[in-house]
Length: 332
Image (cartoon, rainbow, N blue to C red):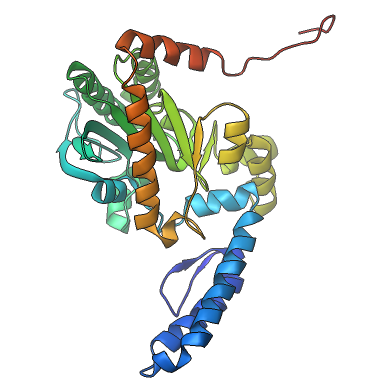
């Protein structure tokens, strides 16, 4: 199991244990009053740590990627809003039931000129925040709130930027009673027809319909160590093998083809945004800058198209997913 490092108080992933000792040594030297005398040794230790991190992260399997995507220090939607957006004005409520804190919506400025609507899942940091946000699992009112604000952005001709980070929609009885499936289905239908640019970024977890509920975009990107699939590895393992453990979770993660590279190969996303060495949680500021650069470049490109063209291209994009071809004489 992953554990919390005692010398830094940071969360340590299981496969990062070799790096932990090097970081402990670096911290010990930095805290010395005569740290300047050890500049060469510090440089050597940092180089060793960086080399080891590069090697470890180059060899991650799918289940390890899921662990990175769930790192407690990984930047969330609220962090990207703080680091990327200016003049953010949050909007609340769905005008039907209430306000769902698992989804944040609001107008903001990104880059020098672009005014956009931001929509994103929020998991929370502290225990109280996580409980309030349902660990990023939105209720129907969250998806209805998102769609209501998207229609408002369409009215004013503003691009829509969505940040996806959820293990799935909330599965509770109350959510089902309030029409969870209908809310998500309505979002899929209405987002496909929005006459304004829509771009989506999977920043952590992209689980099932909970992710798709705000993920029907003209361009979809994933961070390098995020995951995007029809179900979580644990859910898949529980269904197939009636038991979710380390072995079955690993097997399920591999079979689901949920990594960014796999989704790109399968044509389900358009771009992979490279993360800083060791993952986004090690340098949120750098990760935010890369996300901002991609958003600005993509919005600028999409604004060239007329609204009707955007809708048609979006339809063709999703209509072509899952297409197969057979050789002459073969059964389909």
